[in-house]
Image (cartoon, rainbow, N blue to C red; front, side, top):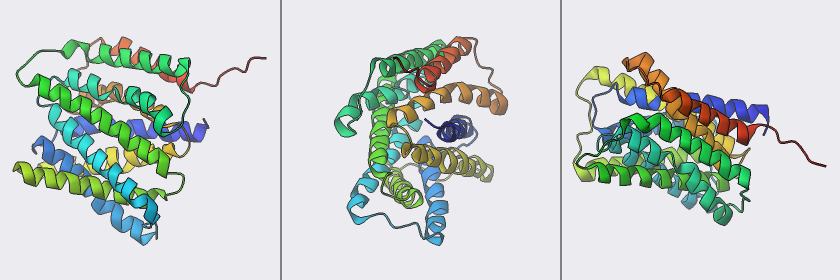
Length: 286
């Protein structure tokens, strides 16, 4: 993997790590947070893509791009509300199984070969995530539903990245993302309307975090993730995302004042070790 791709992935992980702390700063309903995140992102990207003449996705790829948008919308629509139904740690651990889903699905849908080193790096990273979240596990009413939603959100994200990996070689980035973000926005608008969720935040101040969520974790973070899909394997892109809980803990500390517990440190070391195992150049044997 080139240093350019590594730099893009690093910037993407930093950007998406702002999602959780920003969500804590708005008083909108959880599903409405997901809706506005994608609707505002689409509202910015669609005219930008049109102005640059990048809105054309090959006709044969449009159904798949719309499927990616549906999966992305379902990911956010399931995961963000799960944070209010189960413990934060349970949700984080279950949604972080995304690389495992990708490892299982990549040979079938992407023709990728998975080796022992790949499995080891994912195992070490997931262990780190479990340790990071370990101090917050609890059993509560409705937790099973929230856990199931977080696990389904992980599967949706894996599917979204698989579709993106298949299309990014032929579809222009801005055009593809315009269809994906637009499809995700429509999916979430329909969910909010169908479930009767209040779409508006209670105060005008609450719009600032929603705008920031569109600008930073989505338009910057997810756009860079999709750019990276054209340059490296899908599961490697998703593996990098497992560093998000570490950065999100630090950012939540900075913005919300929640001091991260000490067990974040060994968890972070394991995640960093897993990334080094996967991304560092491998020595060629004679």
